[in-house]
Length: 591
Image (tube, rainbow, N blue to C red):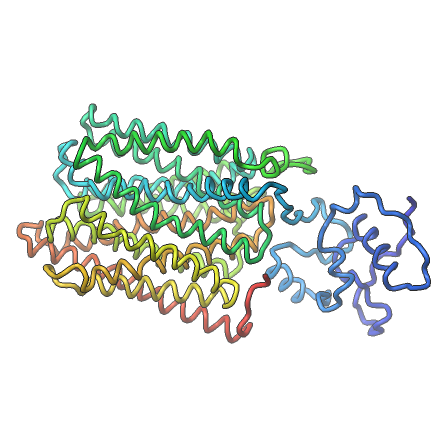
């Protein structure tokens, strides 16, 4: 077929004639655009009896070409400000030049072409990544005192590392694992992540024979790396599988709903093994489940999302920024270690604040390198103010949650004297509320602005933390603790999907792993940092925990630290929603 020789698109210069305004504006003209224009001409020119048959090979090109020809309302002027707005709203970089860019626009999500049963299994095995990640956090918090007795650990600061080591590496390595998925393949990294998680869970159980807390903490840190390999690539698989719309919002809401389920079930089963059998079996059974999910995901994840399909039609793969990766890992680890060792050794020790200073300078260098890198692991140049603000809200909210869950568990065990198993039972209402929150989030994301959903999430974090912090030492469970457990899942399940949807819809398809990494980084790293901040407050006020009243005072002050964080989240969330409402009105995502 011979295509007509179209003239290059005309610009909107000083010529005000509408007849000369190009339909394409400043967007590049590709072969697909010319083919689409032939099909459009057949609709506009009724006198044309026939048009040449368009080969099928051209029908799978850019899905947006026809929309710009058929819907004049989607056209924008070619001035720089308009192009900037267009780039920010769509997630694609708009070039002011009519010349074609060096790389094609990312293709839209394509149907999986699988049965409903197969799709259900696919969604199940992917959202289990969130379940396993939170279960890994809960399995050390619930039987913490039993594990500490087995490892001969008496210092509360050292016990805090059981959970902090896991969250530290999850938050640190998520960005790198997301980039690995972009380079190696999301499915490959996802399957290996389950396998890696299972291996180090088994090693964590064997630490009972070693009898050293340091060995157990190292195993927990490597467990966190396994969870870090899972989370961003799971969201990348879902982001590639579903285009923006109701189904994508529902799937991401289900992914977020696994957070309370994972934590409660992880705490429940680890408490059962710790109290009724032997605590290492909690980690061995967890490892067996991870290995089973690794094999299951290798079979269930569709071929449309496998390596060959991910890189089909691409001559080059994204590069790896090794300098930025090294600086980022060093900075995040050192800052986290400093904040969690501060309560343990004291902030007056030179090695504590010296580590913090080195970590801060490493992160500053990391941002400087990423802003100039060709293949950055953190897309500094493409992060809009809305995305950055949302990530800050996610970090503040989940940091408050980390304080709430850790100190609430300690409060129920140390002050009220409950066993780990009975405390786990007290958190079971969060399972039902998690599902309700997921359903409410799916509805709100399609009927209200995303900024409104984020604001409600911050309010839920604040109310749950405040109700918990003001309860007396000895009171019936149903008065305040029960109410707080009902509220907190709404903060978790609203903030996570809202942040994920924003990034997934603003990043190109081939960088979905990179986009999903940011939310998980803020979630997990903020938990670990917040525990260090709250631990510092506790140590300064609890008089070394000499009496029960001193312990209770330290826990309460740590809670009020979480209240302050969540209160800042409410203020910032309200400002964010108000700013969005003034600029855009009651704008709802297309679905």
